[in-house]
Image 1 (tube, helix red, strand yellow):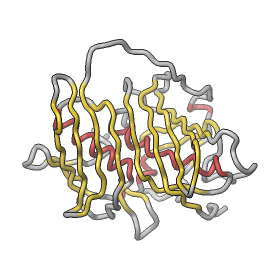
Image 2: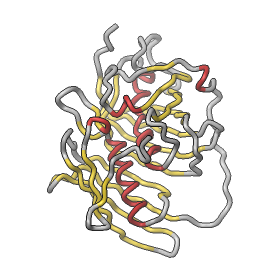
Image 3: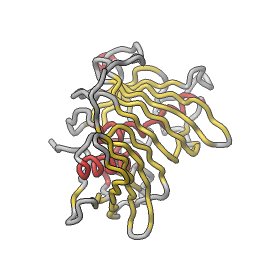
Length: 272
């Protein structure tokens, strides 16, 4: 079993890391595969945590370009401010002179109370939910093949979408790493980029989106295997989708809350 979801590697420079863009971190049609945005965010978070030796509090990614399959992406960590307990950090991911994404974040921890008001949705446990597959099919190499997904509420894109527009824009799934990994900040950062999966349910036809940004705020991360994803498409305007996802442990701990904007992409229905 791998120790981490991504094969992020150090260099002789303690502030530079690199990630080979292999099939297991990509999405996209055959011949046009590229680094999944959530994988880029995940790599940046892990690079920051390893460089600064502090846990991530929040991180926001701005997706600028595509890192194609076979490329090597460098992640440069810039510590803007290092305080007694909090660091303000920026990461630039690039392939040569081409910037792929930037991530701004705060890292650190302080002593204080711990509480939670947002509750997990009332849905069946994983054992009682049917499995679903990503709409691109059964490829054994893409990043989606590295997750097992169960439908808890709503309509998943691989299903026949019936009934038209959703009244709530809400899709709830259980997700688990097929690599056997438990929840961590870098794993949650990947799953935080699953907001597009709710687009078909919300609109009533098969659609998704390309990420423009993603902001993840981390709470208490517990060693859970199944992660409950409460996804909501909140609004769409001028071809841009705005949505959010809340990630809960199996026992209801809110581990992360995320928001994202996407460029709407309409897809043909999957083959019967």
